[in-house]
Amino acid sequence: MSTMGRAGQAPMVVVDGVRKAFHGVTVLDGISFEVAAGDVVAFIGSSGSGKTTLLRCIDLLEPIDAGRIVVAGEAMGWHQQPDGRWVRDSERELARKRQHLSMVAQGFHLFSHMTALENVMEGPLTVKRLPLPRARQLAQELLAKVGLADKAHARPSKLSGGQQQRVAIARALAMGPEVMLFDEPTSALDPELAGEVLATMRQLAAEGHTMLVVTHELAFAREVADVVLMFHEGRIVEQGPPQEIFTRPAHEATRRFLARVTGGVPQPTGSS
Amino acid sequence: MHYQFDFHVIFRYAPYLLAGVKVTFEVTLIAVSLGMVIGLLIAVLRLSRLRVLRIPAIVYLEVFRNTPALVLLIWLYYAIPIMTGLRLSALESVSFALAASAGANMAEIYRAGILSVNRGEVEAAKSLGLTGSQILRRIVLPQALRRMIPPFTNAFIAVVLLSSLVSVLGVPDLTYQAQNIAQLTFRPIEIFTAVAVVYMAISYALSFVAHRIEAWVSERT
View 1 (cartoon, one colour):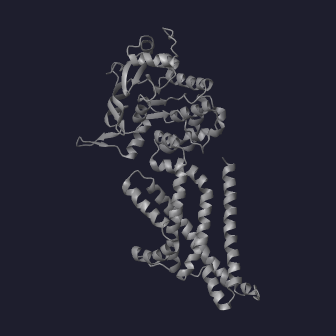
View 2 (cartoon, rainbow over the protein chains, first blue to last red):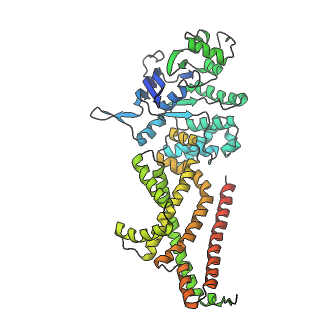
View 3 (tube, each protein chain N blue to C red):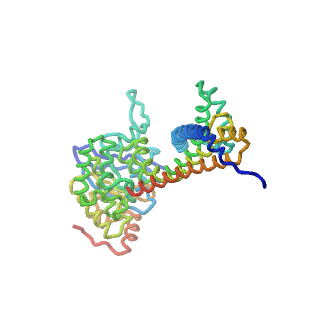
C-alpha cells in the first residue's frame, strides 16, 4: 500500500496490518501505510475513528494486538533474537526506541515543576546524557526557534496555551527525533493561539521534518500535508494528496466528514 | 479534692526524663527515616501493573490498617529478630517495628501523591524516552513530594506519639521513664502532665518546621 514511498528510499515509517482493540472493541482494524522521510502526513476523520490511538501505538504508548510498525528501520515493540524468534521489547528497549519519535500532545503536558528551559533540557539531559551547558544551549536555541527565548525561565502556569504548546514542540525537537508526532496540537487552543502553533509546525514541515499530524485543522492539512489519510471506524478509507481528498473525496465517509467540519459549505477548489 | 500538687518532682527527676526524650528521639528518627523508605517501596509495588508485585503490597497495607499498632509492635518486636536472624537491641527492634507500621501509613501518602501527578506529563516523559525509574525520579517525585509535605507532617507526628508504645516493651523512652518515676514518687499526675507537654512541644515543633518548609518550597515555584 505504498503510494507515498519515494523511489530508492526506505520509508521512514511503515505501518502494516495494525490491529488494536480495547476490551473487545476494535479501534484499529488493519491499518497499513508508509511514510517517506520528510513527508508530512495528516490524519483526518471524526473522533473515535482511531487516529489518536494509532499515533499512540506508533509512539509505543499502547501495545498493538497484531501487525507491525517500523520506524527508521527498527521494529517497534518487538525485536528479533539471534535464533530468529521475535520477542517483546523490555521497558528499557521501548524507552530507547521512543527516541526515534517525539510526541506533541493535545494537552501540552509540560512538566509543571520545571521552567520552559528545563522542560526542553530534560530529554537531552536525562535521556541523551548531554553535558549541562550543551543541553542548556540547545534548549535556548530551540526556544528561540519557536519564538519564546524571552520565556525561558517562566513556569508553564505562567504561559498561554499557545506558548505552552510551542515549548512542548521545542521539547520534542530537543531529542532530535526522526519523526514528529502531533496529536491534535491545536484543538485545546483558541483560534488565535492555534495560529502561532500552526505557524511553528509549518516552519518544521518546510525544514523537512517527517511529521504525522492528527488534526481537525483542514486548512493546515490542505496547505502543509503531502498526504492525507482519512480514518473511518478504525480503517483508512481514503488516502492521497490533500487537493484530491478535499476536492474530490471518493468515499462516502470522507464526504460526510468534510461536509460536517466545514459546516456544509463547499470547499473552494484548488488551493495554493 | 485535697490533693496537693507538687511539680518539684519533675525537676528532681529531669535528667531521667531527658534521657527518655533522647530515646524517644532515637526511636522516632529511625522509624521515620526507615518508614519513608519502606513506604516508597510499598507504594511503588502497590502501583505496579504486575499482580505478583501488587498483591504483597496490598496484603502488607491491609494487615497494618486492620490491626492495633500495639499488637503489631509487640508481634514484630519478637518476629523481626527471628525472621531476619539479626541480633538486635530492644531499641533497634522496636524502632524497626515502628518503621514497618509507619511505612504502611506513608505508602498511602506516597501513592496519593504519585497519583496526583498529571498522567499526561508521565506520558510526555515516556515519549521523550525516559525510563520508568527516571520518570519517577525526575518528573513524578519532585511534584508529588511537594504535595506530600502536609500529610507527611501528620505521619511524622503520629510516629512521635506512637513511639510511646515502645515503653510497653521495656525500652526506656519518655513514657517508660515517666512510669518509673511515677511509681517511685507516687506523683503520676505531675509527671504525666510534664510528659504530655513535652510530646506536644515536639509535635508543635515538627508542624512549625513543616510549615516553614512548605512556605519555602511554594515560594520557589
